[in-house]
Image 1 (cartoon, rainbow, N blue to C red):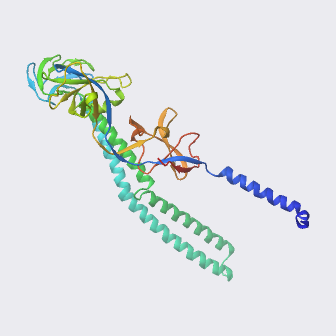
Image 2: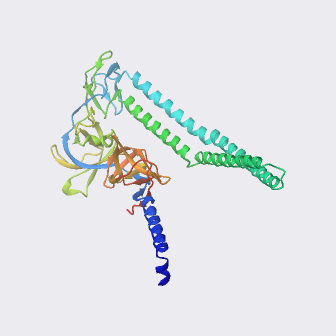
Image 3: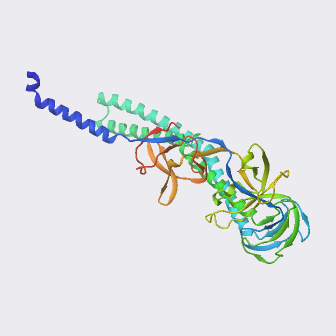
Length: 400
C-alpha cells in the first residue's frame, strides 16, 4: 500500500499511457464490414406470368432500326420457312461497328496473351537479374564491412555499399511484384482478362444489332403482303411484311421490357392452366414485338405450341418463359448493390481496402440480381453503407 502511495504519479502515468494506446488501437482498427464471397453457379433465367390464348392468324414483321431496303428475296404469296430472309436492310454501318468490336476483341486477346507469355518471361528474367544483383550487393557489403573494421576501407565506402544493397533489395522486391502480377491470378492478368470479357460483350451486342437488319420469318407460313421494295427507306418499327402462320392457337404474353432477353425467338416456354398445373405444354417464342424504348413498360410476345393443346381463344393461361442456361452466372443480393456518381456498382475488398467496381446488371431473381459483367468469382463484395474509396476494412463473411 505504501508502495502504491509512494509511486502514485508513476502508476497513474502508466495507466494513462495504456489507456491512450487502447484508444488509438480501437480508433485505427479497420471496421468489420459484412461481406459475401462471389461465386459462380448454373442458372436458368425464367419468368412466370399470365398469357391469353389467341387464334393464330397473321403476323406483322419489322425491324427496330431504320435503313434502305436492299433486297426482298421472297415475294407476295410465297410459302416461307422459319428463319427465311424476307427483307434485307442496308447494314453497312452496323457491319463497321461489328468489325470494330471484333478488332477490339482481337487486340484485347493479344494483349492478354502477350502478358501471359512475352511480358511474363521478361518479368521472370528481370527477377533473376535482380536476385543476382542483390546477391552481389550483399557480398560486396559484407566485404566492405570487414575491410572497414580492419581500417582498409573508409566509412564513406561502407555507406555507399549499404545504399547499393538497399537499392538492390528494392529492385528485387519490385521485380518479384511485377512477376506476381503477371502470373496466373495476378492483378495485371485479371485486369486484362476483364478488358477482354468486356470487349467480347460489346461484340455480342454489335452482332445482335447487325442481325436486326435482316427481317426474317418468325415461323413457317405464307407471305401475305410486302409493304416495301428495294430502294425504299424503311423506318424503325414500321411494318415490312405480313405473314400468315397457320390456323392454330398462340399464347400472347406481355412481360416487362426488362425481361426482353427471355422472349428471344425460339426460346422455350411451358404453358398450363392455373387450376391444372400438373399438365403442362411445351411452347416456344415465335414473335416478339420490336422494342423501341427499353424503359416504356411492357411489350407483346407470342408463343406457339409444338402440339396443339385443348384450349380456346380468350382463355387465360400461366406461362413460364426460359432463357438458355448460364453456366457461370453471378447472382448478388440487392443489399450489396449501390450507386456512385450515377453509376451502378459494388464495393469489393482488395488488399484490405474498399474499392468501388462498376457492374452491369441483368434480371432480378428471388436470390438477387444477375450480374452480367464487372464481378468475378472469389471477389469479396461489401455492404456499401458508409464506405469510401481506399478505406481499410475487415470483411466479415455473410453466412447465407
